[in-house]
Length: 104
Image 1: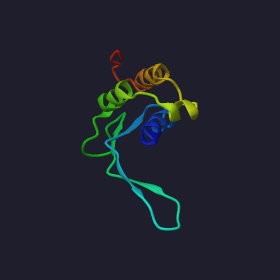
Image 2: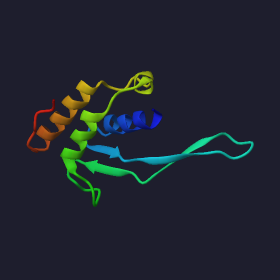
Image 3: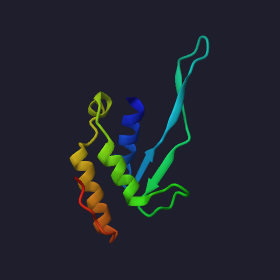
């Protein structure tokens, strides 16, 4: 759940110009130390497809927004609603002159 809310945070913090997906991770524990989560192998989508191979641009960002389901951590962090993310994404595309598909 916390990783999904982190992905939501990235969307919001970047004003929907970047999305992380396909993040993998494992819980790291060492005797006498606090547990930590090690995250690796992210896939990123950027509005202008500038992050490398596998960057599906706006279509990738749109997919992340449409498939995200807010959880207790999203709410606890007071992250924006899915409707606000959709609207922000559409506004970004308009601002940069990218054809805006309708988000359902």
